[in-house]
Length: 178
Ligand SMILES: CC(C)(COP(=O)(O)OP(=O)(O)OC[C@H]1O[C@@H](n2cnc3c(N)ncnc32)[C@H](O)[C@@H]1OP(=O)(O)O)[C@@H](O)C(=O)NCCC(=O)NCCS
Image (tube, rainbow, N blue to C red):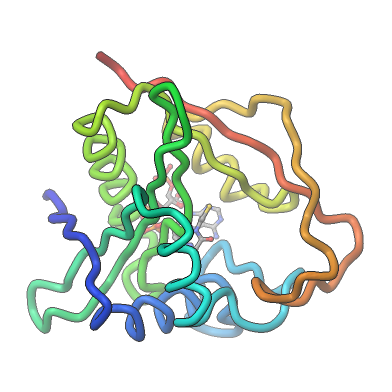
């Protein structure tokens, strides 16, 4: 099975926002197996924030995958060149109804191939340190913890409201083959 990535257009933004909010912050039955809802409340993003992030990074790409049956957006990923062949990967998301069936793995692989075609040699990402099962998932995909950490943006509630005061980001990195 392979996934087809396409660059999101503004008409996709409402669906991408709904997808990200339910995947990152949904709770109860049907929530993502790695939901953030136990340590972050509120929405993950909004259309305004998405537009702001994309306009702040003109070289970045928001890619989506569509459901072949009804053309609904079922996954997304944000990719941004940093420097010297390093690309940042964020917002990797799969519709929770379709999770744990291998789609996330395929989406990540397709994103790695997409950036490699743009000349990327390394992918970096930040993950909140308490997300053990998600970090383990990335380690199984060949990512390594670099040992770097970044402070959580306490005081800036645009990405959600922290429910604990010890959150921090860890950095993961993968060297792409070739
Ligand atoms: C992270 C994400 C993209 C993965 O997508 P997915 O479709 O669930 O991933 P896959 O089906 O390919 O993989 C599921 C894996 O999770 C494991 N898994 C499933 N349920 C689990 C659970 N409750 N606890 C731990 N691992 C679990 C499976 O064993 C499988 O592992 P393997 O591929 O190493 O065998 C998706 O879960 C998601 O959208 N999460 C919310 C958004 C988010 O936080 N993204 C991360 C941004 S850094």
